[in-house]
Length: 429
Image (cartoon, rainbow, N blue to C red; front, side, top):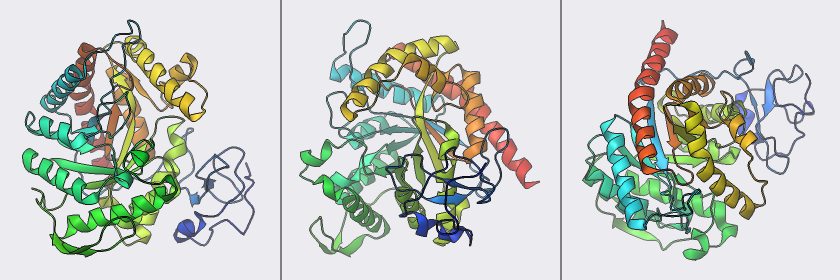
């Protein structure tokens, strides 16, 4: 197969360091994304011609239809599995009935407590400012969960930093860190929903600039007790201290990425962990982003082996595979089609949904054995260190949500951790 990419103008054949310089270039795309004999393994990161495209070299040729990326071998911490939620408050599709906001929060805290008890590693809450979601203030809910849990890490997913004040974000999560005795994390993102921008008085034309500036301030606050700082979108700070300080030496700050090379390179250059959202399409299509992240981190002087990658996806687990699919579909389709209509997307069909549940689809929906197989399959692609599943895109019966968390913690997580540990040991032999 030969791609349509012209030689030699856009092919960074001189080495991987030229990846970053190609990010802002527009190039012709391969008709079929994959390996090209002419460009020796370079592929286009993005298959949408309306977006900027970058090129990278694959570390090895596809094998059995999948792209293999080497796994960093340093710091063999156990593989982490967790849950994230936007605290949905949508009616139950069959009856049209919705529970009260107070009951929904109560149910959420019960699921977070159970996740801790069954040994899951992370519970994360996204920030949203819509009628369908209750999590406009994730740090407040996470603080309530901190008082009821012992081990599980508590994170945002994401904090829409572009429309927030980094000083308050730092103070909120430092306080959460004290309450939880060192279990708080911040997952910062630009935000895939835009409701917070007019709500807090920000202009969408500053979307990228806001995030870049505010992320820089958040990192500065995290690094030093007193700082002097000046920027365009916030009042300056002159040798001011920001309190309280967290229980940990520093708050772990992740950068959430939805699929733009610029965001990947930003996280890598700053030496920050990356959370990659995969909520559609074949996972192999996202492998170049992970490789770009590790290459860019190395170019910036960071050791990629010390920088974890999280994959964040939709998922649901039941004892029976078909039951899991049938339980998840009504609320999922209702929510996805509503959001899709707002954004001009075509609605999702049951056929597309069922395809997403297959091994090479994006969604983790099935019985424990299927979920284990899919996690390990994706680990062979990405070599990632964490997986977070959104177990409820729309409404799910509370009893079924509790069972899903129980299965994830007791049936899935132990086997996945052990198999990945075995793989890491074997790789070093």
